[in-house]
Image 1: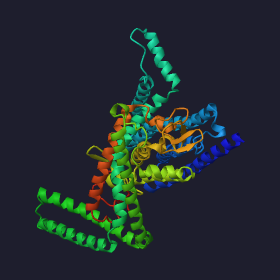
Image 2: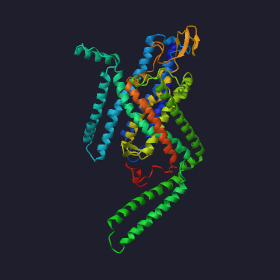
Image 3: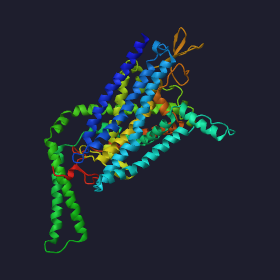
Image 4: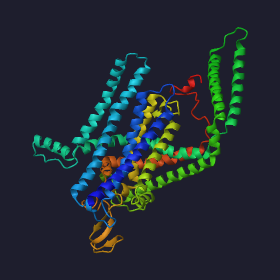
Length: 537
Protein backbone atom coordinates (compact mmCIF):
# COMPACT_ATOMS: atom_id res chain seq x y z
CA UNK A 1 0.00 0.00 0.00
CA UNK A 2 2.81 2.40 0.89
CA UNK A 3 4.58 1.58 -2.35
CA UNK A 4 1.43 2.32 -4.37
CA UNK A 5 1.00 5.64 -2.59
CA UNK A 6 4.63 6.54 -3.34
CA UNK A 7 4.26 5.66 -7.03
CA UNK A 8 0.97 7.54 -7.45
CA UNK A 9 2.23 10.72 -5.78
CA UNK A 10 5.51 10.63 -7.69
CA UNK A 11 3.68 10.06 -10.97
CA UNK A 12 1.38 12.99 -10.21
CA UNK A 13 4.33 15.35 -9.73
CA UNK A 14 6.16 14.17 -12.84
CA UNK A 15 2.95 14.15 -14.94
CA UNK A 16 2.37 17.81 -14.16
CA UNK A 17 6.03 18.47 -14.97
CA UNK A 18 5.59 16.74 -18.37
CA UNK A 19 2.51 18.83 -19.10
CA UNK A 20 4.38 22.01 -18.23
CA UNK A 21 7.24 20.80 -20.44
CA UNK A 22 4.96 20.65 -23.48
CA UNK A 23 3.62 24.13 -22.74
CA UNK A 24 7.18 25.46 -22.43
CA UNK A 25 8.27 24.01 -25.77
CA UNK A 26 5.19 25.46 -27.51
CA UNK A 27 5.76 28.86 -25.90
CA UNK A 28 9.43 28.92 -26.91
CA UNK A 29 8.62 28.08 -30.52
CA UNK A 30 6.04 30.89 -30.86
CA UNK A 31 8.22 33.31 -28.87
CA UNK A 32 11.29 32.89 -31.10
CA UNK A 33 9.26 32.85 -34.31
CA UNK A 34 7.61 36.11 -33.29
CA UNK A 35 10.90 38.01 -33.16
CA UNK A 36 12.74 36.19 -35.95
CA UNK A 37 13.73 38.15 -39.06
CA UNK A 38 11.73 37.20 -42.14
CA UNK A 39 14.66 37.65 -44.52
CA UNK A 40 17.43 36.20 -42.36
CA UNK A 41 15.77 33.26 -40.64
CA UNK A 42 18.14 30.32 -40.25
CA UNK A 43 17.15 26.81 -39.21
CA UNK A 44 20.21 26.22 -37.00
CA UNK A 45 19.93 29.52 -35.12
CA UNK A 46 16.18 29.07 -34.68
CA UNK A 47 16.57 25.56 -33.23
CA UNK A 48 19.43 26.74 -31.01
CA UNK A 49 17.41 29.66 -29.67
CA UNK A 50 14.30 27.56 -29.01
CA UNK A 51 16.26 24.79 -27.27
CA UNK A 52 18.32 27.19 -25.14
CA UNK A 53 15.26 29.05 -23.91
CA UNK A 54 13.34 25.82 -23.32
CA UNK A 55 16.16 24.30 -21.24
CA UNK A 56 16.24 27.37 -19.00
CA UNK A 57 12.47 27.33 -18.47
CA UNK A 58 12.42 23.56 -17.89
CA UNK A 59 15.05 24.00 -15.18
CA UNK A 60 12.78 26.49 -13.43
CA UNK A 61 9.81 24.13 -13.86
CA UNK A 62 11.78 21.45 -11.98
CA UNK A 63 11.82 23.60 -8.83
CA UNK A 64 8.13 23.03 -7.91
CA UNK A 65 8.59 19.28 -8.47
CA UNK A 66 11.55 19.37 -6.09
CA UNK A 67 9.49 21.19 -3.45
CA UNK A 68 6.46 18.95 -4.00
CA UNK A 69 8.41 15.73 -3.48
CA UNK A 70 10.07 16.83 -0.22
CA UNK A 71 6.76 18.21 1.09
CA UNK A 72 4.71 15.10 0.32
CA UNK A 73 7.11 12.88 2.25
CA UNK A 74 5.36 14.01 5.44
CA UNK A 75 1.92 14.27 6.95
CA UNK A 76 0.67 17.65 8.26
CA UNK A 77 1.41 16.45 11.83
CA UNK A 78 5.15 16.23 11.07
CA UNK A 79 5.52 12.45 10.76
CA UNK A 80 6.87 10.71 7.66
CA UNK A 81 4.47 8.83 5.41
CA UNK A 82 4.81 5.07 5.27
CA UNK A 83 6.57 5.01 1.89
CA UNK A 84 9.02 7.74 3.04
CA UNK A 85 9.83 6.31 6.46
CA UNK A 86 12.89 4.53 5.03
CA UNK A 87 16.00 6.67 4.64
CA UNK A 88 16.93 4.72 1.52
CA UNK A 89 13.60 5.57 -0.18
CA UNK A 90 13.98 9.27 0.64
CA UNK A 91 17.52 9.15 -0.70
CA UNK A 92 16.31 7.67 -3.99
CA UNK A 93 13.77 10.47 -4.41
CA UNK A 94 16.35 13.13 -3.66
CA UNK A 95 18.83 11.51 -6.06
CA UNK A 96 16.21 11.51 -8.84
CA UNK A 97 15.76 15.27 -8.52
CA UNK A 98 19.51 15.76 -8.10
CA UNK A 99 20.24 13.89 -11.33
CA UNK A 100 17.59 16.00 -13.04
CA UNK A 101 19.43 19.14 -11.97
CA UNK A 102 22.76 17.59 -12.99
CA UNK A 103 21.42 16.91 -16.48
CA UNK A 104 19.75 20.27 -17.03
CA UNK A 105 22.61 22.34 -15.58
CA UNK A 106 25.12 20.38 -17.66
CA UNK A 107 23.08 21.14 -20.78
CA UNK A 108 23.01 24.81 -19.77
CA UNK A 109 26.80 24.86 -19.50
CA UNK A 110 27.00 23.18 -22.90
CA UNK A 111 24.68 25.80 -24.42
CA UNK A 112 26.41 28.82 -22.87
CA UNK A 113 30.02 27.79 -23.44
CA UNK A 114 29.85 25.65 -26.60
CA UNK A 115 26.65 25.50 -28.62
CA UNK A 116 25.49 29.15 -28.64
CA UNK A 117 29.02 30.64 -29.11
CA UNK A 118 29.73 28.27 -32.01
CA UNK A 119 26.47 29.08 -33.83
CA UNK A 120 26.93 32.82 -33.16
CA UNK A 121 30.48 32.98 -34.52
CA UNK A 122 29.53 30.74 -37.44
CA UNK A 123 27.01 33.34 -38.63
CA UNK A 124 29.40 36.19 -37.86
CA UNK A 125 31.93 34.57 -40.21
CA UNK A 126 29.21 34.21 -42.84
CA UNK A 127 28.57 37.97 -42.67
CA UNK A 128 32.19 38.52 -43.64
CA UNK A 129 31.31 37.02 -47.08
CA UNK A 130 33.36 33.92 -46.38
CA UNK A 131 32.03 31.40 -48.86
CA UNK A 132 34.17 28.53 -47.64
CA UNK A 133 32.06 26.55 -45.16
CA UNK A 134 35.09 24.72 -43.76
CA UNK A 135 36.74 28.04 -42.99
CA UNK A 136 33.57 29.25 -41.28
CA UNK A 137 33.47 26.17 -39.06
CA UNK A 138 37.21 26.41 -38.34
CA UNK A 139 37.04 30.08 -37.28
CA UNK A 140 33.90 29.48 -35.21
CA UNK A 141 35.61 26.59 -33.40
CA UNK A 142 38.65 28.77 -32.76
CA UNK A 143 36.56 31.35 -30.90
CA UNK A 144 34.48 28.69 -29.15
CA UNK A 145 37.61 27.10 -27.66
CA UNK A 146 38.06 30.26 -25.56
CA UNK A 147 34.61 29.75 -24.01
CA UNK A 148 35.38 26.07 -23.42
CA UNK A 149 38.57 26.99 -21.55
CA UNK A 150 36.57 29.30 -19.26
CA UNK A 151 34.06 26.50 -18.59
CA UNK A 152 36.80 24.01 -17.71
CA UNK A 153 38.45 26.58 -15.43
CA UNK A 154 35.18 27.17 -13.54
CA UNK A 155 34.59 23.43 -13.13
CA UNK A 156 38.12 22.88 -11.81
CA UNK A 157 37.86 25.78 -9.36
CA UNK A 158 34.52 24.52 -8.07
CA UNK A 159 35.74 20.93 -7.86
CA UNK A 160 38.94 21.52 -5.91
CA UNK A 161 38.07 24.45 -3.67
CA UNK A 162 37.63 22.65 -0.31
CA UNK A 163 34.48 23.42 1.64
CA UNK A 164 35.79 21.62 4.76
CA UNK A 165 39.01 22.31 6.71
CA UNK A 166 41.99 20.76 4.85
CA UNK A 167 44.54 18.41 6.45
CA UNK A 168 47.11 19.90 8.81
CA UNK A 169 50.44 21.31 7.75
CA UNK A 170 52.21 18.10 8.80
CA UNK A 171 50.37 16.13 6.12
CA UNK A 172 52.25 14.97 3.08
CA UNK A 173 51.56 16.30 -0.41
CA UNK A 174 49.96 13.00 -1.38
CA UNK A 175 47.54 13.19 1.58
CA UNK A 176 46.54 16.72 0.55
CA UNK A 177 45.91 15.64 -3.05
CA UNK A 178 44.05 12.57 -1.84
CA UNK A 179 41.90 14.81 0.36
CA UNK A 180 40.93 16.97 -2.63
CA UNK A 181 39.88 13.96 -4.71
CA UNK A 182 37.95 12.49 -1.76
CA UNK A 183 36.09 15.79 -1.41
CA UNK A 184 35.23 15.71 -5.11
CA UNK A 185 34.10 12.10 -4.99
CA UNK A 186 32.05 12.38 -1.79
CA UNK A 187 30.02 15.29 -3.15
CA UNK A 188 29.48 13.60 -6.54
CA UNK A 189 30.81 16.68 -8.34
CA UNK A 190 28.13 18.96 -6.86
CA UNK A 191 30.52 21.83 -5.95
CA UNK A 192 32.06 21.89 -9.44
CA UNK A 193 28.71 22.19 -11.18
CA UNK A 194 27.31 24.51 -8.50
CA UNK A 195 30.29 26.88 -8.82
CA UNK A 196 29.92 27.06 -12.61
CA UNK A 197 26.17 27.62 -12.47
CA UNK A 198 26.57 30.20 -9.68
CA UNK A 199 29.07 32.07 -11.84
CA UNK A 200 26.55 32.17 -14.69
CA UNK A 201 23.81 33.14 -12.23
CA UNK A 202 25.99 36.07 -11.17
CA UNK A 203 25.95 37.34 -14.76
CA UNK A 204 22.22 36.66 -14.83
CA UNK A 205 21.84 38.85 -11.75
CA UNK A 206 23.33 41.79 -13.68
CA UNK A 207 20.89 41.12 -16.53
CA UNK A 208 17.98 40.97 -14.07
CA UNK A 209 18.99 44.28 -12.51
CA UNK A 210 19.36 45.86 -15.96
CA UNK A 211 16.50 44.41 -17.99
CA UNK A 212 13.97 42.72 -15.69
CA UNK A 213 13.75 45.57 -13.19
CA UNK A 214 13.06 48.05 -15.98
CA UNK A 215 10.69 45.67 -17.79
CA UNK A 216 8.60 45.20 -14.63
CA UNK A 217 7.81 48.92 -14.73
CA UNK A 218 7.67 49.67 -18.47
CA UNK A 219 5.41 46.73 -19.45
CA UNK A 220 2.42 47.52 -17.17
CA UNK A 221 2.66 51.28 -17.70
CA UNK A 222 2.71 50.84 -21.49
CA UNK A 223 -0.44 48.72 -21.19
CA UNK A 224 -2.11 51.37 -19.05
CA UNK A 225 -1.07 54.37 -21.18
CA UNK A 226 -1.69 52.66 -24.51
CA UNK A 227 -0.45 53.97 -27.89
CA UNK A 228 -0.95 57.18 -29.80
CA UNK A 229 -3.81 57.55 -32.28
CA UNK A 230 -2.80 56.17 -35.68
CA UNK A 231 -4.88 58.84 -37.46
CA UNK A 232 -3.14 61.64 -35.59
CA UNK A 233 0.27 60.04 -36.25
CA UNK A 234 -0.42 59.85 -40.00
CA UNK A 235 -1.46 63.50 -40.08
CA UNK A 236 1.63 64.52 -38.12
CA UNK A 237 3.88 62.38 -40.36
CA UNK A 238 2.37 63.95 -43.53
CA UNK A 239 3.11 67.42 -42.21
CA UNK A 240 6.70 66.40 -41.43
CA UNK A 241 7.13 65.01 -44.98
CA UNK A 242 5.85 68.29 -46.50
CA UNK A 243 8.21 70.28 -44.30
CA UNK A 244 11.26 68.17 -45.20
CA UNK A 245 10.41 68.23 -48.93
CA UNK A 246 10.15 72.04 -48.76
CA UNK A 247 13.60 72.24 -47.13
CA UNK A 248 15.08 69.94 -49.79
CA UNK A 249 13.61 72.05 -52.62
CA UNK A 250 14.97 75.17 -50.98
CA UNK A 251 18.50 73.71 -50.85
CA UNK A 252 18.33 72.41 -54.43
CA UNK A 253 17.22 75.84 -55.69
CA UNK A 254 20.65 77.17 -54.71
CA UNK A 255 22.33 75.21 -57.49
CA UNK A 256 19.82 75.89 -60.29
CA UNK A 257 22.13 78.46 -61.87
CA UNK A 258 24.95 75.91 -62.09
CA UNK A 259 26.75 76.84 -58.88
CA UNK A 260 27.78 73.83 -56.77
CA UNK A 261 26.47 73.47 -53.23
CA UNK A 262 28.82 74.11 -50.34
CA UNK A 263 30.00 71.15 -48.28
CA UNK A 264 27.69 72.20 -45.46
CA UNK A 265 24.67 72.37 -47.76
CA UNK A 266 25.51 68.99 -49.30
CA UNK A 267 25.70 67.47 -45.84
CA UNK A 268 22.37 69.03 -44.87
CA UNK A 269 20.81 67.82 -48.13
CA UNK A 270 22.02 64.28 -47.48
CA UNK A 271 20.62 64.32 -43.95
CA UNK A 272 17.27 65.68 -45.16
CA UNK A 273 16.99 63.01 -47.88
CA UNK A 274 17.71 60.30 -45.30
CA UNK A 275 15.09 61.81 -42.99
CA UNK A 276 12.58 61.92 -45.86
CA UNK A 277 13.13 58.22 -46.57
CA UNK A 278 12.47 57.37 -42.92
CA UNK A 279 9.30 59.49 -42.88
CA UNK A 280 8.04 57.88 -46.08
CA UNK A 281 8.64 54.45 -44.59
CA UNK A 282 6.79 55.53 -41.46
CA UNK A 283 3.91 56.68 -43.63
CA UNK A 284 3.67 53.28 -45.33
CA UNK A 285 3.77 51.47 -41.99
CA UNK A 286 1.16 53.80 -40.47
CA UNK A 287 -1.11 53.25 -43.46
CA UNK A 288 -0.80 49.48 -43.01
CA UNK A 289 -1.40 49.81 -39.26
CA UNK A 290 -4.54 51.87 -39.84
CA UNK A 291 -6.00 49.15 -42.08
CA UNK A 292 -4.81 46.31 -39.83
CA UNK A 293 -7.58 44.46 -38.00
CA UNK A 294 -5.23 43.92 -34.99
CA UNK A 295 -5.14 47.70 -34.45
CA UNK A 296 -8.94 47.86 -34.40
CA UNK A 297 -9.18 44.84 -32.10
CA UNK A 298 -6.53 46.39 -29.83
CA UNK A 299 -8.63 49.55 -29.54
CA UNK A 300 -11.68 47.48 -28.63
CA UNK A 301 -9.68 45.62 -25.96
CA UNK A 302 -8.38 48.85 -24.42
CA UNK A 303 -10.23 48.36 -21.08
CA UNK A 304 -8.81 44.83 -20.78
CA UNK A 305 -5.28 46.14 -21.40
CA UNK A 306 -5.72 48.74 -18.67
CA UNK A 307 -6.90 46.09 -16.21
CA UNK A 308 -4.00 43.83 -17.20
CA UNK A 309 -1.55 46.70 -16.75
CA UNK A 310 -2.92 47.46 -13.30
CA UNK A 311 -2.64 43.78 -12.38
CA UNK A 312 0.98 43.63 -13.60
CA UNK A 313 1.99 46.74 -11.68
CA UNK A 314 0.36 45.34 -8.52
CA UNK A 315 2.26 42.06 -9.01
CA UNK A 316 5.49 44.01 -9.50
CA UNK A 317 4.87 45.96 -6.30
CA UNK A 318 4.06 42.69 -4.46
CA UNK A 319 7.36 41.19 -5.62
CA UNK A 320 9.25 44.32 -4.60
CA UNK A 321 7.66 44.39 -1.12
CA UNK A 322 8.28 40.66 -0.63
CA UNK A 323 11.89 41.05 -1.74
CA UNK A 324 12.38 44.04 0.56
CA UNK A 325 10.92 42.15 3.56
CA UNK A 326 13.08 39.11 2.81
CA UNK A 327 16.25 41.19 2.53
CA UNK A 328 15.37 43.14 5.67
CA UNK A 329 14.79 39.86 7.50
CA UNK A 330 18.23 38.64 6.39
CA UNK A 331 19.87 41.91 7.42
CA UNK A 332 18.31 41.76 10.90
CA UNK A 333 18.37 38.05 11.71
CA UNK A 334 21.00 36.33 9.57
CA UNK A 335 24.53 35.42 10.64
CA UNK A 336 25.97 38.14 8.38
CA UNK A 337 28.25 38.34 5.35
CA UNK A 338 30.45 35.40 6.31
CA UNK A 339 27.44 33.05 6.15
CA UNK A 340 26.00 34.45 2.92
CA UNK A 341 23.11 36.08 4.84
CA UNK A 342 21.47 32.68 5.30
CA UNK A 343 18.34 33.20 7.34
CA UNK A 344 17.52 30.93 10.29
CA UNK A 345 13.76 30.77 10.04
CA UNK A 346 11.29 33.38 8.82
CA UNK A 347 11.08 36.18 11.37
CA UNK A 348 9.12 38.75 9.35
CA UNK A 349 5.82 37.99 7.64
CA UNK A 350 6.42 37.68 3.90
CA UNK A 351 3.13 37.83 1.93
CA UNK A 352 4.33 35.77 -1.05
CA UNK A 353 5.96 33.16 1.19
CA UNK A 354 2.72 32.79 3.18
CA UNK A 355 0.68 32.51 -0.04
CA UNK A 356 2.87 29.73 -1.43
CA UNK A 357 2.81 27.84 1.87
CA UNK A 358 -1.00 28.08 1.86
CA UNK A 359 -1.26 26.82 -1.74
CA UNK A 360 1.35 24.04 -1.50
CA UNK A 361 -0.91 21.35 0.05
CA UNK A 362 -3.43 21.89 -2.79
CA UNK A 363 -1.15 20.64 -5.56
CA UNK A 364 -0.69 21.91 -8.28
CA UNK A 365 -1.73 25.46 -7.32
CA UNK A 366 1.75 26.35 -6.07
CA UNK A 367 3.25 24.74 -9.20
CA UNK A 368 1.05 26.95 -11.39
CA UNK A 369 1.91 30.05 -9.33
CA UNK A 370 5.67 29.49 -9.57
CA UNK A 371 5.38 28.80 -13.29
CA UNK A 372 3.43 32.05 -13.69
CA UNK A 373 6.08 33.89 -11.66
CA UNK A 374 8.83 32.45 -13.87
CA UNK A 375 6.97 33.38 -17.07
CA UNK A 376 6.28 36.83 -15.62
CA UNK A 377 10.02 37.34 -15.13
CA UNK A 378 10.67 36.20 -18.71
CA UNK A 379 7.97 38.45 -20.21
CA UNK A 380 9.07 41.50 -18.23
CA UNK A 381 12.71 40.77 -19.08
CA UNK A 382 11.81 40.63 -22.76
CA UNK A 383 9.93 43.90 -22.40
CA UNK A 384 13.04 45.48 -20.86
CA UNK A 385 15.32 44.07 -23.58
CA UNK A 386 12.97 45.20 -26.34
CA UNK A 387 12.76 48.75 -24.98
CA UNK A 388 16.49 49.06 -24.20
CA UNK A 389 18.11 46.79 -26.81
CA UNK A 390 21.18 44.65 -26.22
CA UNK A 391 24.06 46.77 -24.96
CA UNK A 392 27.73 46.19 -24.26
CA UNK A 393 28.44 48.98 -21.78
CA UNK A 394 27.63 52.16 -23.80
CA UNK A 395 27.55 50.43 -27.21
CA UNK A 396 24.22 49.14 -28.49
CA UNK A 397 24.77 45.89 -30.34
CA UNK A 398 21.28 44.88 -31.45
CA UNK A 399 17.63 45.76 -31.27
CA UNK A 400 14.99 43.12 -30.56
CA UNK A 401 11.91 43.75 -32.70
CA UNK A 402 9.09 41.49 -33.91
CA UNK A 403 9.88 39.91 -37.30
CA UNK A 404 13.09 41.96 -37.61
CA UNK A 405 15.65 40.31 -35.32
CA UNK A 406 18.84 38.91 -36.82
CA UNK A 407 20.00 35.36 -35.96
CA UNK A 408 22.95 36.71 -33.92
CA UNK A 409 20.60 38.98 -31.96
CA UNK A 410 18.27 36.05 -31.28
CA UNK A 411 21.18 34.05 -29.88
CA UNK A 412 22.15 37.00 -27.66
CA UNK A 413 18.52 37.30 -26.60
CA UNK A 414 18.31 33.64 -25.58
CA UNK A 415 21.68 33.79 -23.83
CA UNK A 416 20.45 36.72 -21.73
CA UNK A 417 17.08 35.10 -21.04
CA UNK A 418 18.79 31.84 -20.12
CA UNK A 419 20.98 33.65 -17.59
CA UNK A 420 17.98 35.61 -16.30
CA UNK A 421 15.96 32.43 -15.73
CA UNK A 422 18.94 30.92 -13.90
CA UNK A 423 18.86 33.86 -11.49
CA UNK A 424 15.09 33.52 -11.24
CA UNK A 425 15.59 30.46 -9.01
CA UNK A 426 17.41 32.61 -6.47
CA UNK A 427 14.86 35.41 -6.92
CA UNK A 428 12.06 32.99 -6.03
CA UNK A 429 14.06 31.88 -3.00
CA UNK A 430 14.44 35.52 -1.97
CA UNK A 431 10.71 36.10 -2.45
CA UNK A 432 9.72 32.94 -0.52
CA UNK A 433 12.74 31.48 1.36
CA UNK A 434 10.80 29.15 3.63
CA UNK A 435 8.85 27.62 0.76
CA UNK A 436 11.87 27.05 -1.48
CA UNK A 437 13.90 25.43 1.32
CA UNK A 438 11.40 23.03 2.86
CA UNK A 439 8.03 23.41 1.17
CA UNK A 440 5.25 22.72 3.68
CA UNK A 441 7.24 20.25 5.81
CA UNK A 442 6.74 20.13 9.57
CA UNK A 443 8.52 18.18 12.28
CA UNK A 444 7.92 17.02 15.83
CA UNK A 445 10.00 18.79 18.45
CA UNK A 446 10.11 17.76 22.09
CA UNK A 447 9.47 20.89 24.14
CA UNK A 448 8.63 21.46 27.78
CA UNK A 449 7.67 25.09 27.15
CA UNK A 450 4.43 26.08 25.44
CA UNK A 451 4.96 27.39 21.94
CA UNK A 452 3.05 28.73 18.93
CA UNK A 453 3.20 25.33 17.25
CA UNK A 454 0.53 22.62 17.36
CA UNK A 455 0.92 19.97 20.02
CA UNK A 456 0.58 16.27 19.40
CA UNK A 457 1.00 13.19 21.41
CA UNK A 458 4.74 13.02 20.89
CA UNK A 459 5.61 16.75 21.07
CA UNK A 460 5.13 20.04 19.32
CA UNK A 461 4.60 20.32 15.57
CA UNK A 462 6.74 23.06 14.08
CA UNK A 463 7.37 24.34 10.57
CA UNK A 464 10.74 23.19 9.26
CA UNK A 465 13.52 25.77 9.33
CA UNK A 466 17.32 25.83 9.52
CA UNK A 467 17.22 24.93 13.24
CA UNK A 468 15.32 21.68 12.60
CA UNK A 469 17.11 18.31 12.97
CA UNK A 470 18.57 17.05 9.70
CA UNK A 471 16.73 13.72 9.89
CA UNK A 472 13.38 15.46 10.36
CA UNK A 473 13.42 17.96 7.47
CA UNK A 474 14.63 17.42 3.92
CA UNK A 475 16.16 20.41 2.14
CA UNK A 476 15.36 20.83 -1.56
CA UNK A 477 18.15 20.08 -4.01
CA UNK A 478 17.69 23.51 -5.55
CA UNK A 479 18.59 25.19 -2.28
CA UNK A 480 21.83 23.19 -2.09
CA UNK A 481 22.81 24.36 -5.57
CA UNK A 482 22.03 27.98 -4.69
CA UNK A 483 23.93 28.09 -1.38
CA UNK A 484 26.90 25.82 -1.86
CA UNK A 485 29.28 28.82 -1.76
CA UNK A 486 28.53 31.54 0.80
CA UNK A 487 30.21 34.34 -1.16
CA UNK A 488 27.78 33.92 -4.07
CA UNK A 489 24.86 34.19 -1.64
CA UNK A 490 26.35 37.40 -0.27
CA UNK A 491 26.63 38.92 -3.76
CA UNK A 492 23.05 37.86 -4.56
CA UNK A 493 21.88 39.54 -1.36
CA UNK A 494 23.33 42.91 -2.33
CA UNK A 495 22.11 42.34 -5.89
CA UNK A 496 18.55 42.18 -4.54
CA UNK A 497 18.94 45.67 -3.08
CA UNK A 498 20.24 46.88 -6.44
CA UNK A 499 17.24 45.25 -8.15
CA UNK A 500 14.81 47.12 -5.87
CA UNK A 501 16.60 50.42 -6.60
CA UNK A 502 16.64 49.76 -10.37
CA UNK A 503 12.92 48.95 -10.34
CA UNK A 504 12.04 52.18 -8.55
CA UNK A 505 14.19 54.23 -10.96
CA UNK A 506 12.64 52.45 -13.95
CA UNK A 507 9.17 53.13 -12.54
CA UNK A 508 9.88 56.88 -12.35
CA UNK A 509 11.35 56.92 -15.89
CA UNK A 510 8.39 54.97 -17.31
CA UNK A 511 5.89 57.32 -15.64
CA UNK A 512 7.61 60.38 -17.13
CA UNK A 513 7.57 59.01 -20.69
CA UNK A 514 4.63 59.65 -23.00
CA UNK A 515 2.62 57.20 -25.06
CA UNK A 516 4.53 55.10 -27.56
CA UNK A 517 3.83 55.03 -31.27
CA UNK A 518 1.48 52.44 -32.73
CA UNK A 519 4.41 51.28 -34.92
CA UNK A 520 6.97 51.49 -32.12
CA UNK A 521 10.27 49.89 -33.18
CA UNK A 522 9.23 49.18 -36.76
CA UNK A 523 10.92 52.19 -38.38
CA UNK A 524 13.97 53.85 -36.81
CA UNK A 525 16.73 55.93 -38.36
CA UNK A 526 19.54 54.63 -36.15
CA UNK A 527 19.00 50.89 -36.64
CA UNK A 528 22.06 49.01 -35.41
CA UNK A 529 21.02 45.77 -37.08
CA UNK A 530 19.81 44.85 -40.54
CA UNK A 531 16.13 45.62 -40.66
CA UNK A 532 13.39 44.26 -42.83
CA UNK A 533 12.51 47.86 -43.55
CA UNK A 534 15.42 47.99 -45.95
CA UNK A 535 13.52 45.70 -48.27
CA UNK A 536 10.70 46.78 -50.52
CA UNK A 537 7.39 45.50 -49.16
